[in-house]
Image (cartoon, rainbow, N blue to C red; front, side):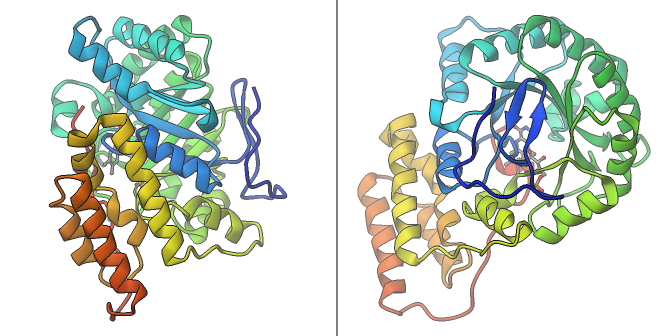
Length: 364
Ligand SMILES: Cc1cc2nc3c(=O)[nH]c(=O)nc-3n(C[C@H](O)[C@H](O)[C@H](O)COP(=O)(O)O)c2cc1C
């Protein structure tokens, strides 16, 4: 399977196509899975703006299915459209059989690549032996991967950290088990499970993983890969084959195409106020379609500021947006902010707001 990008560029050392098993990505800038954020509406926007080689769903818990509630949740989490492909879907769990069953269901739902979560650091994950807790159990990672590979025809990737904590840096054991049992790609969030997002990434740990696994297995760098300088460092210091971007893509839907431009000698794109407003309106329509008006309005509260990041007054706008309760509120708040901007009534410095932590999303 091969997927062209809507913004073709000349491949170079940093930006180039990459294969994950039988799936050929047009470029190596990947959207990170983010619970509570990377739903179909958000992913479509990322694809429409361009520059993103692979989108990812939110994680799907391997808890078995059957009840109406579980079926509905699975349907919402995995809903996808042909124009966003290729798409990765992620399994969150620790029981090989349940993870295998979930992988099978994800393939049936349209996944091109299936990913295992070995990185989620929230308390619930640690207590239940899932997410980053799996970094303490390399052999269990091997068992899960083996079961998932046997259950699906889709390539299996493992998204991991450098270790559970600084005292338990098990990335090499986990990488070895994953690949020995059939994983065809790794994504390494180059921090351990207790490091907050503000802690600089450790590219030497990433480099060790890159050296360990065969060159045919792409190793993607994750963790603050949001500037051209960070990407160059991940390539030059650690040999990364691609870059997965999370929070920064939320704060800036144009990030992928701008990183691509910067790394290939192209020109950065600066969306105007009218374009930001139009894309925000499109995102809102997609969210309402996905969740219905009542829930959709609440879901939209956390996205609105994405489209205003870097503009003056965005903090206040974000605050106003957190209170919208209807379509009419949405229209009023957007009109008031963008209208004031267009009339030059909002003065002051450019303001940036960012998602802070995994805790900003929904718990699994
Ligand atoms: C709100 C939120 C939700 C997240 N949900 C997931 C998830 O479902 N699966 C996963 O593997 N990682 C999840 N992550 C981690 C990101 O995929 C990524 O590894 C992390 O944010 C570091 O990348 P960044 O610095 O580019 O944001 C989440 C992160 C955030 C901020």
